[in-house]
Image 1 (cartoon, rainbow, N blue to C red):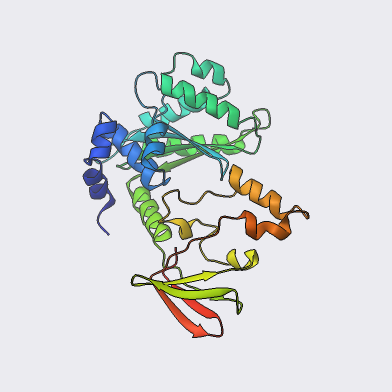
Image 2 (cartoon, rainbow, N blue to C red):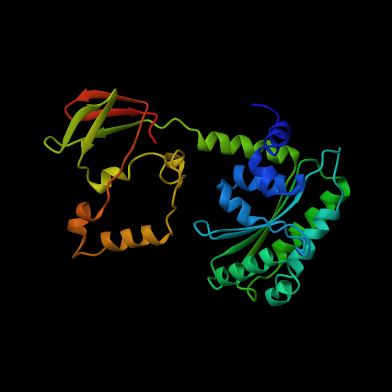
Amino acid sequence: MANVLEIIKNEITQDYYKNNFPNDGQRFVAWYMRNIHLLDQRQAKDAITDGANDKQIDAVYIDEDEQKIYIVQGKYYLGESVDATPVREVISAWSQFSNLAQLQENANSKLKTKISEIATALEDDSYCVCFELITTSIFTDAAMDDIHSFQTKLSEEDDAELNYSTQFSVVDKQGLEDAYSCVIEQTNPTLNHTIKLEAGKYMTTELGATSVIVAAMPLKECIKLPGIKDGSLFQKNVRQSLGINNTVNKKIKKTINDPNKCGDFFFFHNGITAICNKIEECGNGEFKLYGLN
């Protein structure tokens, strides 16, 4: 794989980044939100709060599935090292979180909206506020001292009064390499699976040059498909994985658990369309699916 810094430098020259963000600093943060947090173009643009009166907060992303609120500060710098200044900017942002109303004062319009969303999310005491400091360089020893001190302070801090926990992580040049490699590995797996279909409840045909199986399968067999939990099964779906806590899936769960409705679940469901690179028929209703998604 090419050096991640070269990838970033090349990709932030694309029209999406050039047309939506005025400088390389914002483009870098947007790249990070898209390629590490896996946001789509609209979500990444919506997350960016950098600009005048940004209160040292470059981006905000609320992950409802993981119940985490990401507060991102980015430093796009191609020099040898970054000093402690951005670390202190993160600490400044953190210090204002105990009073969101005050933080919202004089904030830019995008950040004001995000702070309102944060306040709503924090009404649920299961959320964690995750401060992320990202850079294309490496931190000086002095900066690392400040980072470790802040992380120690957070680990010792009693968050009971705030009703939420707090984390602080840093992603430097090597961290970007590791995170990007990890995401590439997770989002481009080869998923193979064998299914066993009941006689009389499936048919095989060809549409054009494509082999097709139409089948009625028990839900308990459907959930055995690989890649559901980590979302990799949905990597080519334009909506990606919906996670487990969205409104649609909550209602599906409610239907399954309702003794008066669960028997008719097959008729309530829209069905599942899955594609793969190859189907191998093994006999007796057994099929091997290669490159499933």
